[in-house]
Image (cartoon, rainbow, N blue to C red; front, side, top):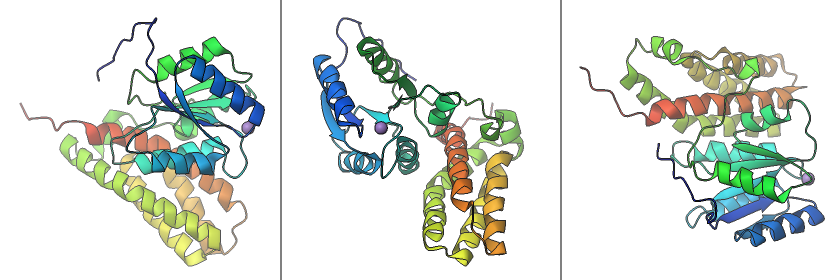
Length: 268
Ligand code: MN
């Protein structure tokens, strides 16, 4: 990975997507960012942010500042959706979470949702500039491993062992999974939305079968819980379980993306 060191006196002028529902906070952040030389497009909630990000993929934003608490769709959900849609494209837009409460576990939740950085409100101008500088120049960096044991990923050795030590095979299967995964998650989301038990059972079963190959028990167990709930015919708590599953899958996908991107090793 190439790390571009930027001279501190001339920070890059960025094209920033700002998602913030509170008008006062939004205007303040816009002004601060503009004073730092950036261009800002603002969204009032996660749905708007997702839409703007998608519409502007090709003359793209450099970074997203994402408020965590917003109506319609919160920042965690919006970040999760963006990471799902980036899968297999090699793209990774830096996302900095902006949160009102520095509660314990907040940072971990943001990282688990695929965000790269984190700042607390009220926004401090120099902290904002620092967070942006720390996140953007590195480009496609992968979020730090969250401390939550549910999200603990396999070691490379554990993962490779599932593929008979064959890194080319792991690379191929990781690529297939990354491509298929958003579709299966969409199926689960749709089935939950319409309370379609059979579709939910089928999609959760498919996902369970796929993740089972990657030596990460968390998402396998969560997918199985959804499958069993659907089978039992009662869906109370299913949305919460799905939310955990989404976070676990983001984490797994971060790990797999690293392997999918790796150049195949030549045998010596
Ligand atoms: Mn808010």
